[in-house]
Image (cartoon, rainbow, N blue to C red; front, side):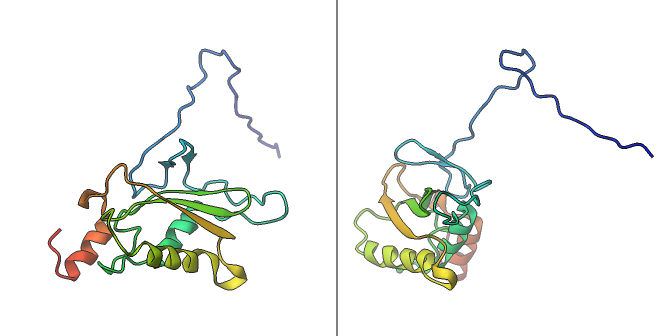
Length: 164
C-alpha cells in the first residue's frame, strides 16, 4: 500500500503567478466585514477564537452579532442587527467588543436603553458573558436609511403593520 501525500505550492514573493492580496471591505450592515471609524477592517470572525495573552478567550464576531439580535430598538420593536443599526464589530485581544452603531435618528432619546441592552446581551450570562466589556461608537455616516434593514427585519416590520 502506498501513501499519497500532496503539498501545495506557495508562490514566492515576486513570482508572476502569485495572486494579488486584496482585502474585502464593505459597510453593509448585513455582512460581517466592515470598516471601523478608525479605518481598521473587521472580519467575519474566522480565526477569532484564538486565546489571546492572559488566557482570555476572544469572542467571535459572528457570535457577537448573533447576541446583538437580543438588543431591540425600543421604538420599533425590531432587533438592532436586522434594522441595520450595527455598522461594524471589533473584538480586541482583551475581549472587549467595540461596536460601530447608528440610530434611526440622531435625536433618538433612547441611546442609554440600547447601550444597557447591549451590555446585558454581551457581558452577562453563563460563564460571565461573551465579552469582558463593550464600547459603542455612535456613528452618523453613512446615515441610516430603510435600505439598511435586512430581509428578516422587513418581514418583522411588515408583521407589525409597517409598509417597507
